[in-house]
Length: 210
Image 1 (tube, rainbow, N blue to C red):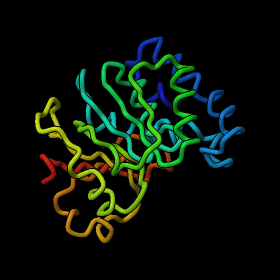
Image 2 (image 1 turned 45 degrees about the vertical axis):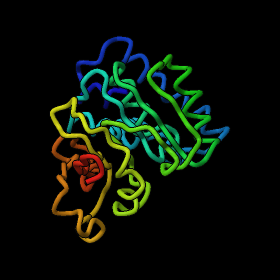
Image 3 (image 1 turned 180 degrees about the horizontal axis):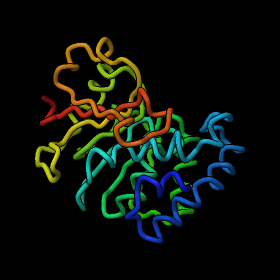
């Protein structure tokens, strides 16, 4: 928990309490349904919670912003972001039902009213959103085709509506034609831990699917 407060000093006591509960909740649910690798559970706050909050270093979502988390798994980055932005609305989707069950159980235990978890494929989501977030569920060109028509036209935030993608490594080859239109934020500029050395938040602006 200390690692979160090291980089985010403005969370309310309620938010701090919600973050503090995550370790026990995920340890419990991971024993029932494996949503985090066994070797990673002891690094939950660094490799999952703080990693997810890397998006909060790139953008401060304004109240009322609607965000879709695609391939959320056990709830990352959606649950940490939902704690950080209680006045925003989050829809977390995953194609594996037992993972969305964990999301619903964790959100309920934390008292998060701004999360909806849906068992479905990204392509089946009909609603439109201001931002779409994800943690490297597939190569970017594939992901882009899943979500390109799911963006609201009207912008509420300082960044134009689009994709915020957590990804690591050398991305020029993977992104191909999307590389030159993307903005890459190095998480090592925000977080000092070695884990973040090659991790990035990739921002790709989408305007009605363009």
